[in-house]
Amino acid sequence: MLPDNRLAIATDILTAAAGWREQSLQLAARLRDDPVVREVTSGLDVRAYTSGVVLELFIDAELTTGTAITFWIDVIPQAEERWRITSEVRGMRGTEQELLRPVQDADVVTFSQVDQIVTRSLEMFATLDPSIAL
Image (cartoon, rainbow, N blue to C red; front, side, top):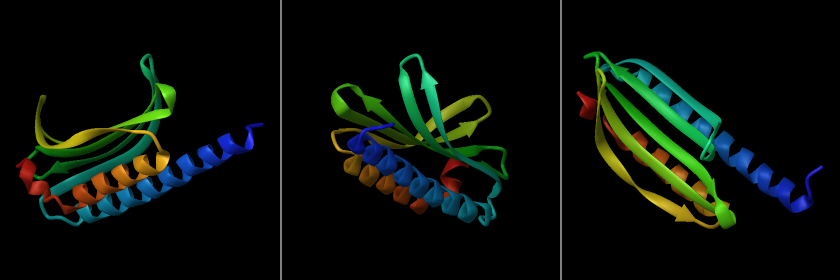
């Protein structure tokens, strides 16, 4: 059994992740309605790499031209109770990738800050026109 403070932290993380996933599902649904979008895939994964655990949130939209646009956010716990958030928007043409919109990586201390940054990134993604990847 987790100590009370760890259970509260775990609950905060899961609650925030559920909210982010809901936001990404809403964005994916909106993208599906765009006439330049053929297919949309989205997900939220927790992956264990040799470098550590990463929470990955992504939305991939394949466009009618065969190109694609990918929205990506990684939430990475760091040493000493710090968090690193990376996010980007990439255009994909075959095997070539182009960074369309860099988003400043962030290193923060509180999970509240993580939640704010991820939410802002998702809100920024929602304002983008998928045709920027054409």
